[in-house]
Length: 254
Length: 321
Image (cartoon, rainbow over all chains, first blue to last red; front, side, top):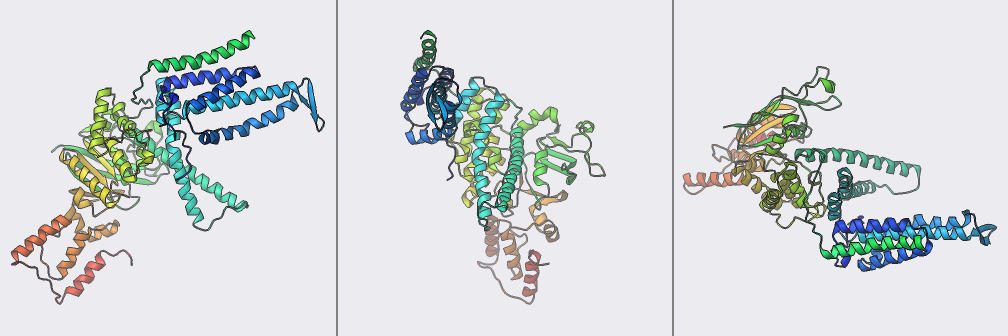
């Protein structure tokens, strides 16, 4: 089995977040993510991070699974935290190799890091606690434009097919004696193989489209689903949304 | 009987000008079981795509080039389904009547869950929710997929995927079922089950049109054959087609193994009027012959045996020129 981007692997666990109605879950967490991302105060952003971690723990998602997804984002965040202290004007804290480290720089770097980390952590309880197809249906019910939902849906559906296709091609390449080296020849080979994958994908997309048209596809698509909002869903979403609002109220008042 | 599918002078060229179909004429009656056979690249799949208007017959110019899009004339439709022209305007109705099952289930199952896939067609027909659910349940159970509703298609076995893709078409309750190589890549059990399912649908009145290279499945699946190689080369009952060795060879075809075996038996003096096409027919034929011959069959090597055997072997050989 390949290492698929299996985001909903732990969607069948049981936690308050898992029981949360997918539509309410998406709206509430998106609201909280945006409110944390727009905070300007480091201390409040830190509270936001703590809240995010709280929701992650509440969702009972395994820590290893969460870290695996978070670590890639960290690769993009860490450079900010490393560069910001040197580039912002402000009061000097110390000098490293003659470069001035400013208090404002450290503060701003920390702010960016905290905001980004919170957002990434919150995505997990939002997405990984629902089966992917239910998330798609929830988006559809929330009147997200059909074309976007369909693109997401097909991407997810065919990632598996493409990975298998690539794997088959790669096996065929290797079984005929090709070894991956950093030579121009090897790079050219990989380029060609990838080109082939594009051609294959294009042809498959045509066949899929034929199959869709054969069953009456006209561009709009609807699915059936059973969502019902319970009182606990309302309570939880009110709680999450108020948290976002309160963070901003504190920022304005203090 | 009513004509379910009629094509008249159906032409199609690929965008690069290669002619794929050249004046294809066909008439299939309601309730028939028909196979379209022919070599690889003969245009079988291209032909099937015309049956529900995915592709349209285009007037082929002598130069082999396509006319500009504005010059296309769809009013003179080349395909008729139950007497109705297949064109863009009537597509909704045509789709209701003609269900196409594609060869690769991964092309056919594109929704997140099996339920959504089977519901896709009925939803597009604009049916109400109760009716959609009823049809999904019904077609899943007919293909032995009850309880698969929430499964994802990429986690199913190939045989299950194949059945799911038929369920997805069946839920539209088509009167004509078109299957592109239904038995390809299936294990013997899945293959046998699939043949059973197709025949059951036919008994309920569904017209069956298949393309296949699985010549041993043909006697179990259909009553009539079209040999297609860009144009219709021949048409007839299985026995008519299988008896024409020249025709078969020219179109890279062959006959069922049972048929070959009885040709061999004939060389050893076995006497039968009609060569059996399937195991069932063979059992019937043997029982009859043994019965009329006083409880046994008599095989022997006579003066022409070797000569005739040579001929039979030669008839079905592709490996020398």
